[in-house]
Length: 311
Image (cartoon, rainbow, N blue to C red; front, side, top):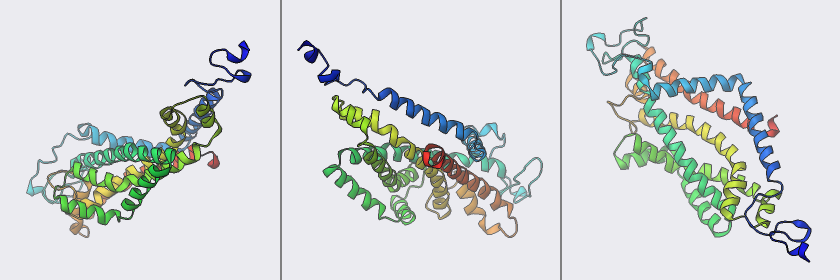
């Protein structure tokens, strides 16, 4: 009898209560560690990911510390140098106002990257949390959250952003971040919800629930690690999408406005000079395309590395 009633054990010595680790927790941790370790090794051997990652680091350094890349003042302009062609001292030449175009391109990286990072962080935290709650609890919580997601997803992204920014009438990084966040969070919520639904019925989750693990522990300790991989892949890709979205909205006149330096502003102000001085359009477009493409290629490489089916 004493064997059956000893503290913390039941028939066969199985734990009956508490919030301690389950018998298969070490194996689960080992599998997760192995997954991330294998993914890291595969990414380091992938030249596409390495090149894309290095390009993103370069653009990120331009946005964070532009003075590392240029000592020119982008606002030191002279109409005498208007549209002067590129040279060794000024590799991007001068714009229509006679400002150094290279310094404009360097300083133009900051607004795009800041908006993209802030909007992506917002949708991951907010959308990921709602998707986790909807997938784990189901029932009325899932119904309400899913219907709200359907309503937001029914809005055309570009048209909705134009309407919102026109109504707000304040074009700055904060308003652009808010609009991108409001229109983009449902997608990552759906991705997280699907991952949570497929993970919450796994054996180790049932084992943890059987020994008395709380809902918060089940969600964040056992279920969420399996949902991080698709969230990370989507977040990497959407970073590039937000950079492109900022430039598109600015080009259409509802995004950032001068005197702010932005690749979208550079493209918008110099599109009429494409036939005469194509470099005024090619330089900012090249930086924009390279940044967006790098984020997309990084996301594809992450997907292949984190999904065992692609190995």
